[in-house]
Length: 211
Image (tube, rainbow, N blue to C red; front, side):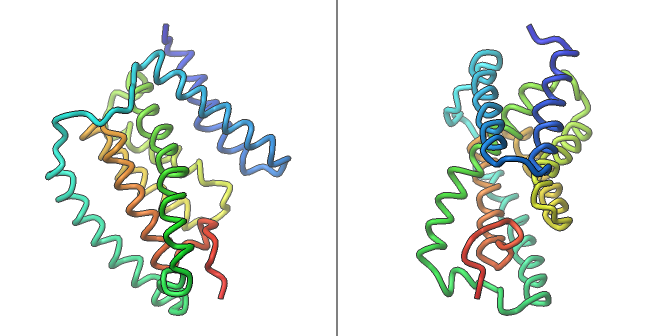
């Protein structure tokens, strides 16, 4: 049975204590072990307590999703392209132009081994599990964006924290609107892969940015 205190302790452990600990210097294999254990705990809880099966739900409003995504993606493209242009023109589309094979590999690896697990944890599990704790929709999305940004603290980069907070707001809104891990993963993958393509991958530890 889910109790409020139990959920609060679980929330603090998984979404505050664990991410902050990853930013503290200690053995990497211990960090990896902590993340793996946390992820499998989340999968167990989703299946046992929340009864989530990850099938693509019928009746999704794909048209509405794509209309909004096109608009927001175009804004992201304009803003990030201008940013890279003014910061360092040589980085603009560096990897797709200079190492297209690596670029294609990263698209697949990032989408399926990074984006999908993140969306299971930070959208599907978070919103299905903690709705009883945060009943105000706007505040719920805000808290989700905060902890999603916190998960990237180990990058030690202010811009990364800002971008992931903004991403968290967008992804949180998408998940609550459509209740679909698939749709929010598509959105996340599109933005993340674009950042790598446009030349902002170095701050996110993507390979291939060296000249």
